[in-house]
Length: 288
Image (cartoon, rainbow, N blue to C red):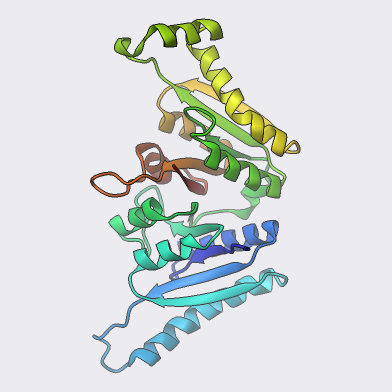
């Protein structure tokens, strides 16, 4: 089954930037584009019945889609107006998509139709990757030799989904991947005879981390031999190390653990920090 790239729009500047980004990515990957708008009937507008309000919404979405179709004449575009809450509509739209693309504004929480906890709910509960694009996104950055930056942690399986997304995106763009792994000194009680032997065999903490990154990248290098790869290992918190590379990134890819906790789904501290502070588009990729 061919999954479309889905863009959520609400008429704001940032959502239109997200629509443009999604259209360009759909063309690169030779996928259809689906445009989704969530709306609610406003009973307060007594002079306008449901059909009239639906017509107003449809007109605005049609105009945005027409502009995209003119820029990309070979692109297949469909639209869906979903009546109901934005979080439910967008999370549902993500389920059948290759990725869901949304707009965000500034260096603060996701806004537009994603107000407060709603944006976090969509990102935390979406079963597929979610890409956040700022209103100031510049298409030229995609052709300026910048890397697709991806965070890697743990063993090869822990970041497999994020690495797959990063390599697929880089291959479609003719870009390089910069894989980033951050490390910190473990507490004394974390040392054990087994872990000490692993560190000794690797030659120390930093060589061990470099080896772990190389091993995680190996299957993706083999699968995408045409994609140049740079390895970046640095001591520090994962969020800080990733953000230190954002200036050279055309896209930043981070993972999100898909398991629910006792307090519900969560984005995770690293993804949360990058979403709030990276200037480039950010893809959040769920994994088990």
